[in-house]
Structures are given as C-alpha cells and as structure tokens.
Image 1 (tube, rainbow, N blue to C red):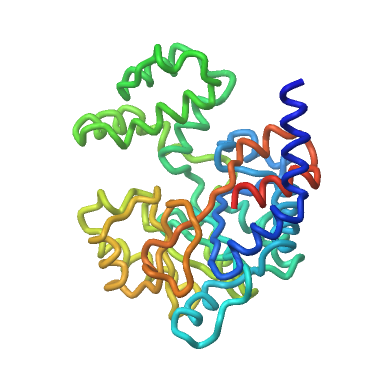
Image 2 (cartoon, one colour; image 1 turned 90 degrees about the vertical axis):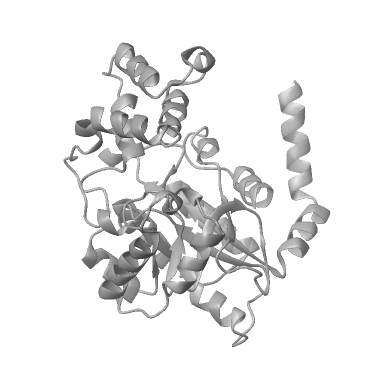
Length: 338
C-alpha cells in the first residue's frame, strides 16, 4: 500500500503545472549535458554480456530522446562554443547529448535513431580501441564473471585478489558484486594492480567474435551526417594517472582530426578523473572543452570549459522495467533526473 501511495503522489507531482514550470525555469538559461554509453537492441548478441549499469535498449533510447525533445532544445557542441565566444546565444533550455567510449552499438542503433529524430550528438571515442574486438579492462572482467557458466569459486578468488571484503558484499546482486570488485582494481597500489592485471591478462585482452567498437569509416559517416566526434583518451586509462597525459591528449586529438578533418576538439575525461593540471593540459593540447562526470547544470556563459558537468541517467532503473517505458516513467526519468 505504501509503495502504491508513493507512486500516485509521484505521478501527481510530476504532472503538476507548478513542477513542470519550475523545471522549465531552472533549465531555461543553463546548459544541461546528458551522457550515455551503450545503446543495444535486445536481439543483438552483444546485449547478453553488456553491463546494464551503462546500457539501455534501442527502444528505450528512442523513447527517452523523444521525451527529451519535449522539454529541451537540443544543441551541438559547436553551438556551445559559439555561445561562449558570443557569436550567438544558446536557445532556451539547451541540452547537449553525449556518448562515451565509442561502442559500435552507438553507430548501429543510436545513430539511426538520432537521424530519424533530427537530433545531433557528440561521441567521445577511445582512439586505441577504434575498430577493436576487445573490451576495456572493466568490461572484459564484467562480461567474463557475469556469465552464468562461471563458478562462484573463480569469482571469489578474484574478489580476494583485488582485496575486497567478501563479507560486505553478501546480499548484493551478483552483477553489483562484480562492479564493486572491478572498481577496486584501479584503487590498488601500483605494484599490486600490476600483479592483478598480469594474472588476468588473458581474460582482459581476449578478442570477442563480434566487433565491439566503431571503426574509422563509421566515425567518418557519422561526422559527415552532422554528428560530432570527440576524444575519450587513447587507452581508457584515467589521464590523472598517466605520466605522459599531454602526449596522450595530443595523440588522440590527431586521430580524431585525421578521421574527420575537424578543427574543433572536445574531450570526455576517462572515468571522469581530472584536476587543475590536466584541465590546463587539455587547453594547451588544443581542446576547446572537456566533460567531467560531475553532476549538475552549467551556467551560461560557462565558468570553466574544462570541467563541464553532466547527467547520467540511471540505466539500472530502465532495465528494471520490462518492454516499452510508459509516459509516466519517461517523464519521471527526464524531469526528476535532469
């Protein structure tokens, strides 16, 4: 009964003219940036191993995009730059759509939906993985341990290797346990991390039977169709932990330039990790802005172009719903989370 009452009250609030007016007023003169990762059709074999923490279905993305267009005016990164340079003003309630990583499903599923709805987006590419059949370290471990055929003893051994407290993880769903354990890898001391990565080298670097990341031709086609292509670094390693971070920035920027011919460059910090030193290096390397994983709206004019805030919609909540999202669910996702 309590859950039902909560749902009814939530619906009343979301549909109230006051709430909708308040949302519109807050967003009217601020830039919202939304971040996605993977968009996959459920019939695609890649969906079976995808981490649902970062994945939504193609139907869900289409529904969300249509709903976003009802409450926001979609803008391109070039329009954001023009506004910052006082060339033109941003429209009311501006929203920039971004994708991180460079997954091939972005091309196969998100790109056609964007074109169909006359929408643009900015795709941040991990340049060493262009055309790759291999996962990032995190996704490789997740897909391996999430398969039902894997024994619990093997995963428990991994938990011990990354120095996780198995007792504290009891009661969590298996996939959540995997994500918690994987998050520990980058927090290990350098020597221990090196030891763990070497131990699981074959799992991390195994090739999959289907291609996982977009290739150069697909990126060029998207760019020529009005999409924007930015950098997500070379190796998906946090740039704050890379000794030659400026060299990595310049290298990834050159790859993007060679594919698209663009002279405007955008960055999404891998894992959202950044600091003042890295922001300065981004500017020095020729990037025009950088997106973080910090949550919030961006004032216009933007105070710091190298610490842009974004919203990441909680994918786990979408996958809790089976089939097509209802209008109330879509309204809740857009109005409550942005």
